[in-house]
Image 1 (cartoon, rainbow over the protein chains, first blue to last red):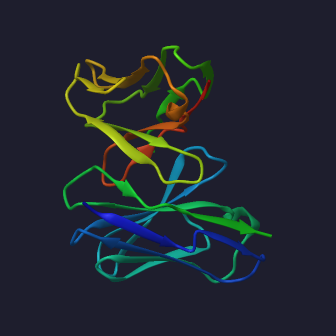
Image 2 (image 1 turned 180 degrees about the vertical axis):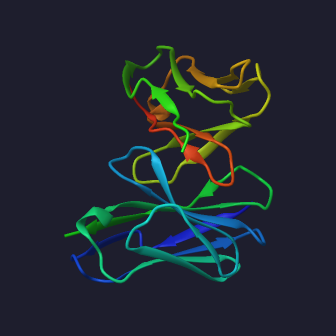
Length: 112
Length: 108
């Protein structure tokens, strides 16, 4: 079964600073990878998804970007953080052709 | 984005009580998933339902998919404090479309 690692677990950053969150996956090859954001413990908002190396689809226009430099590595970045970027960021993976997603432990980001 | 409505938003009950939470949409699901999320952690997949009218059981949890595949319910029998968490339903697709969840608190 797959294991998803995310780091850091928590992060406090000032407005205008850059961001890099990393997600790595073990136990599966060629997964679909996803970044979600969750505000105030409620529903998840899909930010990006990737079906392969270098292939990124964005769901929400914003100052965030994503990259997939390796098959099982997914990175979420920002050049300048906004207060509204605060939230709980979750990485998820799904096997090719499967709808069942498995989530990492998340990163709690607070922008001050 | 097609909306998923979950109800109730919040539910606080005592240990031993039964409860049902709901997930509804105006359009048909190809399949639907239920997740449970504990504070500070990622959601954990509980079940996937695919066929209209399908019923699946996971210990004290019973999941039902509506005949028309537009709604689903989760029933918990004899709730325990360990059932506390946020219950999310999600429509399957190239990516999951989540409802806002039902936040359940079970007190001893």
